[in-house]
Length: 229
Image 1 (cartoon, one colour):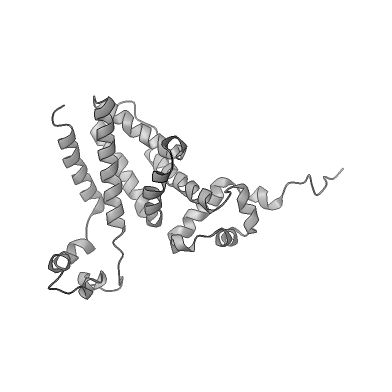
Image 2 (image 1 turned 135 degrees about the vertical axis):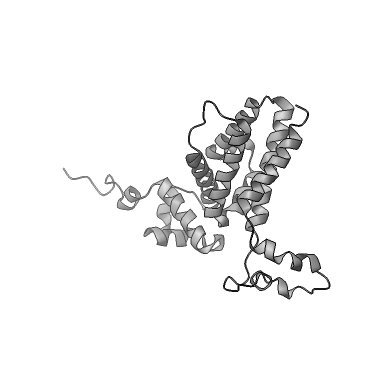
């Protein structure tokens, strides 16, 4: 006997998964920025009615939390399994480099990734985020640090990585087609007498190597944090 309409699986729901919904949300933010992300627009991109999304994200807040989950899941996937034998400082550098690469892929998500978890209790943050936190703490432990010192090192490293990338990715280009750095960044609009240093730094602000700067800062920080160990 054919199933009744009530018992038959929803054709919309059978096409959707949480992973697909989150991937589509991230892709939309990548293309058009976070302001473009709405449940209605996401439903249009997926070719479904907006109400179909609420089975996978109960609302915009849950969708945003899921996008943070997806961001950290991508970091973990790129990192792969934790090596059994590894130089802990070298692995910290690799984590920073991978995080930087994922942030470069999804720059619109970075402010969300940095700020939103601050309003959520630690144990309720996305599992993928907690796994990366645990991985970093484990590496610090392999370096011979524990307790308060390990937590201090962890917080300093996380603060540098997130803070550097947030500052780096917030440098919005004013005119991408303009070859002159001062004009490309829009710094020519600042009065020269009031902002001489910002204007003078235009070439460096426009053309810099974020992974190299991030790694150099990590070395300085690690040297200082472990100097007395």
